[in-house]
Image (cartoon, rainbow, N blue to C red):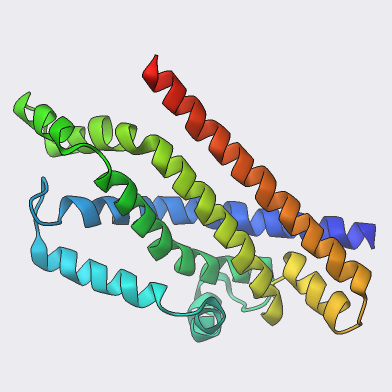
Length: 216
């Protein structure tokens, strides 16, 4: 059982790590576009902003378990199967991208508008404003937002076990639920709690370090 728990934990970490990488890769640009195309911002595009906001809201409104089943054909197209850890990564990314995009949007909106105006007045172009002003200023909030996203992905990965996604959730369902092994269920819960606590502590520490460094 110890080997099963270790294997399931590594599968969960693998799913979450890969899904987080793709989520940041696609979600960060989407969140930036949502901000800079909003009314009064550096690249105002009301129609584009409205369409993107609608798509993001629609994707966020779908429960993960339903989304996972709904996109099975897409999952098979991407990875060739709908079962296993690699297959679970696809719905994890699809579910997390709009969530993370909104977190990025909220974090960037917290950047003082006066700083952006000052950079514009000094001749900074749009790319420089995004990369040298907005993102650095919002970095602590982005780190905390990324931490929240990773924790959500851990929860999603546990649900992926319901359809053979592997990881902690799959182990809990196969042994803890179907075989009525309470000790396995308790062990999986403890492992998930430890993962979440460690990740949250690490995210808080990194964000606080940045804030302290910025004040010096």
